[in-house]
Each structure stands twice: as structure tokens, then as C-alpha cells.
Length: 192
Ligand code: ADP
Image 1 (cartoon, rainbow, N blue to C red):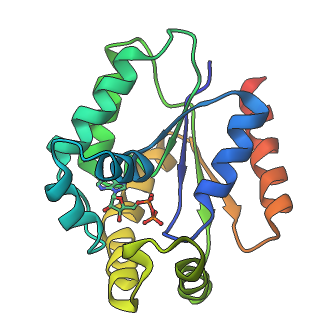
Image 2 (cartoon, rainbow, N blue to C red):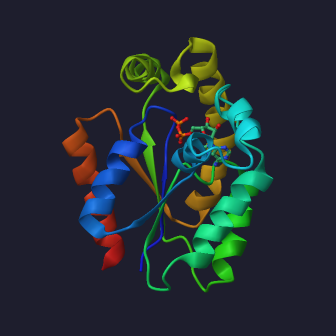
């Protein structure tokens, strides 16, 4: 059992790498952004509310996110390894997740940071907007809002994990396969 957080700015390749990790190690994925988009697609109860935040590149309020995360942790098989992708993104979310896991006698074992400088991100997200048509990729203001939140809210939360010696940094500008290899090296070390 190994619980990992994959963190990185928008466009850093979290989704692509998460897929590889799920295939290779059988992680259960907890990808909050994808789960929120799914709620919109399925006309879920909070659809309009979620849509207003997500499409503008803002963080969805914690009461909505926490309910989704809590339910997933509650219903997971007790021996499952979890891969958190895009959650937590703030110190408040870190505290919530820690408390939630403690009540299931679980903890975060490692946090893998996909490090990609801003110049690359804008280029990648503009490209993705032509392929995936995500509303939050459609204009530079929305992309920049997400990059700003990452700098202001998410980067500070990494100090917390660094102090616990749980933070692993990967150069996310490398080719996809190289990034995958670097992540696998970290996970294999953690599993020993
Ligand atoms: P990206 O990291 O490229 O922005 P995601 O699919 O991970 O893509 O997230 C898309 C959007 O989903 C975010 O901009 C935000 O609106 C919402 N979201 C994702 N994770 C969180 C979170 N931890 N807290 C609040 N909102 C979130």
C-alpha cells in the first residue's frame, strides 16, 4: 500500500503520467479535476456551481471537493494504493487530507512534483486547447489565473511535505518516457 500525490502546475503532464502509474502499479486514481468535469457532464447536483468555478480557472469551493474526496477514501478497498492527482492544492486541503487518511490508518508516502517553468506551460496549454477543448484552456486569462493560483496556493503547501522528507522533484520538461522513468524510480524506491 502506497499513497502518492502527483502535483504540478496546469499543463505539467500530471494526467499523462498518472495514466502510466495506474497501468504499471495499479493505483486507484483520485483525480479531482476529472471528477469535477464528470459531475458537470453527468448533470450532477452541483453542476452549475462547479461549472462557474472550473470554467473560469478558479478553485472549486472546499465543501464540494471535500465531499468527493471523503467519499472516495471511505469506499476504497483497505489495501488499495491511492494516487492523488490535483488534490490537495492548498494548505487547508493538505490538513483535510491528512485528517481523512488518519481516520483510515493511512498516510501520504510521497509527493511527486512535476516541475515545469511557466514559459513551457503556456505553450502546452494553448496546444491542448486545440485538442481537448476544455473551457478553462480556451483563453490566456483563464490559463494565467490557474498558474497564479498554483504559485500562490500550491507551491507553499510543498514546504510542508519537504519538511517531512516526502517531496520528490522531477524535471517535467523531459520527454514523456523520461519523466515516466524518473517517476518509476521514485516509486520503486518508496516500495522497498
Ligand atoms: P489543471 O491542473 O491543468 O488545471 P485539472 O483537471 O487538475 O487541470 O483541474 C481543473 C480544474 O478543476 C481546476 O482549475 C479547478 O477549477 C478544479 N480543481 C481541480 N483540483 C482542485 C482542487 N484541489 N481544489 C479545488 N478545485 C480543483
